Length: 339
Image 1 (cartoon, one colour):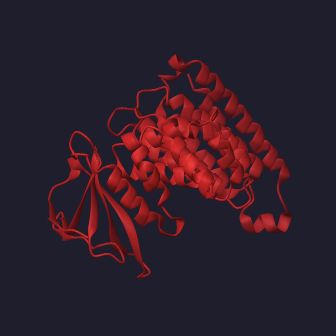
Image 2 (image 1 turned 120 degrees about the vertical axis):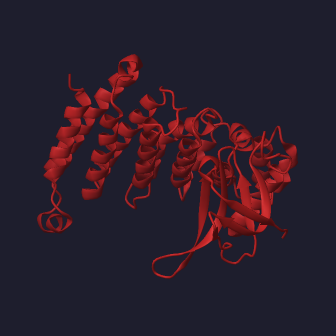
Image 3 (image 1 turned 135 degrees about the vertical axis):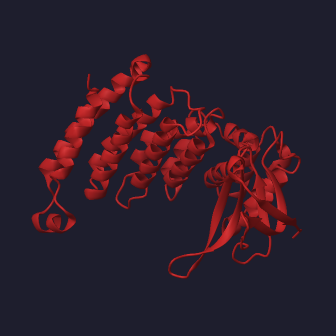
């Protein structure tokens, strides 16, 4: 029996094929009928997903390909026709896809379901970053679910990182979303701080810290109150958090997190950071980040990560995060050093 979502996605792709290319749209004007048709189909998909969410046992037999096709279909529609109403309904569908999949066990290796959730959240982030999108509306749609994913320590690191990325996008330049996420009945900043402290991955900790920093008020008295509320169990971190400056966030956040993780052993408690002067990975020598002569190497629970300097195609220099799973390492040579 064909899953009802398959037919709905077929309808979505058919409607997508009717959309005018960008050049034709400028000549003919906005294809309103197609937009309404897309919204109608997305509403149908939303209803099917809502039914799926209410009967998870039926869902266990669903092929992941059905939902992977959903992501592709929604992304194709977005890339071809950036309509705000369509994006809103597409986001609602993506939210339900994520909520349904989170009911499954995502602890397996190379989990197809995990990839679908990451792809769904990444597509929502693309939606959020559009100039004409209503960030407040998107915040109301997504922030609750995103914060639940971020604070759930049992979920895979990639899911939590991606969730944090979307949250940071929603908070960028949007006072209303900051206000919404700061409400105690909606979101407890002390839980966010505790989640950061207990995270076993440096990049995940950094994303937590960025959210905390964005939520922190500007006035000094309000900042101190916020920090005291966030680090109520970890009072020794209050002044260190307040010392972080916006114009030097990456350096200050590195100092903050290094201090936070100082007592970690890198085996039973991660992340553990060491400073090295030289790295050779798989016989290739890596280059220090632009403007630095040392590396910070983070030993996470499942990976080693560090920031390196790389040359882009246009000969520009970029700093990139290199992350390697322990299971995929062949040779790794570090020469320790100090700043």
